[in-house]
Length: 144
Image (cartoon, rainbow, N blue to C red; front, side, top):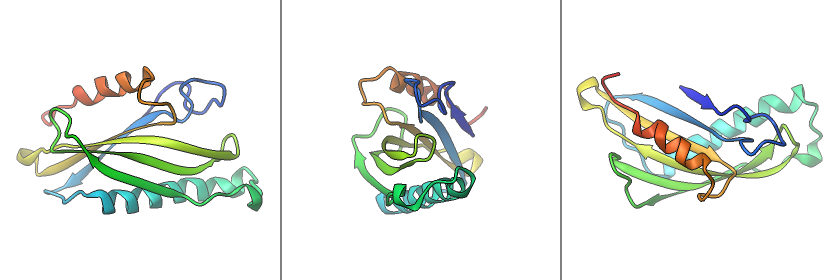
């Protein structure tokens, strides 16, 4: 599941690079800072990598992709909550960008799944986009 907001791909929009997605993992998975960082780095490396030839991005514009994730105070209805940043090339604007990230680890034991809900945006935590993401996360129900 991936939910981009309407202005996701528009470099002039307040919603540029703002989106939410969920991993629906089989079984009771161990989620921690290390595996979140590794998987986010791999995800964004693939995303940027496949856009380099399509958008003819010169090598001098490429920046190292780095994900830094730390466990934070657990949000209501989460098993664990993580926060952090992803530094990468905004391949649309062709310049570096820092994406802020909130990760909500949930549980659906009856369905034998571990849902992991991601909120991503370059906007600071005071921006209204985070309230919209919270509404999406709060609407999650294992039974739906």
